[in-house]
Image (cartoon, rainbow, N blue to C red; front, top):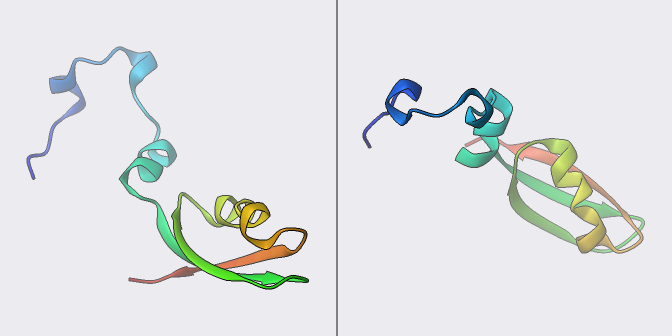
Amino acid sequence: MKKLSLEMLRLSTEEILGRSQMKSIVGGGRFRCVCYQSKGSWTGTYSDQATAEAAGGGHCGSGIAQCTEINQ
């Protein structure tokens, strides 16, 4: 894969992403999540643990999600 510098992209300063934004575009991390007070579990790619656990509303119904990052 060819690496590009920001200068080569000729972006305005409003279009340059911060490190946390770039991390989420690249893929973030892989998380294994389990539902408490409800049944269910899943694995997904999220930018961070809070985002993974927030997805629990769709997976856990009224339960609470607890997610752990999977080291690859």
